[in-house]
Length: 418
Image (cartoon, rainbow, N blue to C red; front, side, top):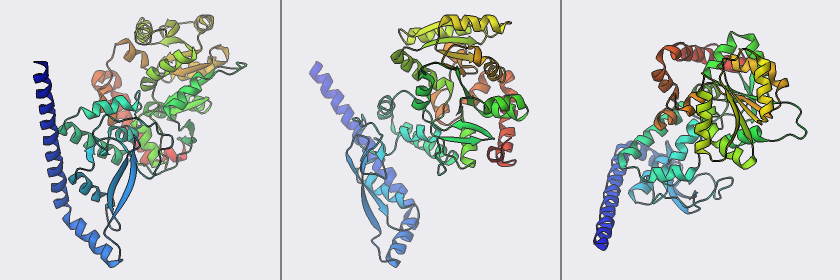
């Protein structure tokens, strides 16, 4: 019985694979037929300059296997010749990431991909376009390998959309400015390393802020907040709005450094480096629930204390934080209160690093669900937040987003400063 079941499963899998191959071939041929005028133009241009129309180039995929791809020698949309490779069954539309532009893979972790073949598109390209950082490439590719053809097509549409919205081609400076405010254009892992680094001897509490559309709008009308942001130890660019502003300013952002994506990775690193946390802010009981949830998810996570954000005495709460011995303080008091509070009190805090994290505790306590992955991949998490809290978030997003874009494209404040 088991043998019959296995045979049936293998036959079913083989039939599905064959069907997908037929669909792939058909779709590639249809696209090639649609592009015949372009192909004829490129062939004509190649003849005029006395070159072969096509050239073959060898790249490597993320597992280190050689991938051959065709491209046009001259003309428009040179990579459109890749469709020939798809039609021949050499690559798929969606599959194992190809590392183009090099015959080696420096700074890229090699691993065996769960996908059948290399692909022109992949989920890692999508996440790179929006700066989205999740935990590990392999789980993403495992999920991608299980997608059907329609899901593959939707992923390609998302990728093309994101590359159009967040196109790259600017400076990759590590330390740079937007809106007259310095920020660290860094990878998520480097941001986490900075938070967890121990200075010997400990001289002061380092403070980090997340710059987003709302904080920029607030800083434009609040000179104290603007001065505070300029005086921080680190600022991180957070959200699709900042990515658009960076692009307009000629800057390629590395990762989207936001607190919600950072915290799971930060907790894992904290376990390895024996860091401890204090959670301050949000409504009564929310920080406690968030802490308990994190400890359930990350066994052994050291959370020294929690407190809601409606305290009256700075002295009492600072004493409680210092007595806890926590090395990392997460402050969720909302902007601009959290930034101003930290700027005022950082010299009194004994922890090694403090971050202003906005509504972070609401997500990890379960009070507010996180946006679906497809919305985060498109940089549309703000739409989800607006749907969840239409009254409280109306001014921030419905009014604030157009104002921010006006600052960027009309007033040019991302380049000139606020």
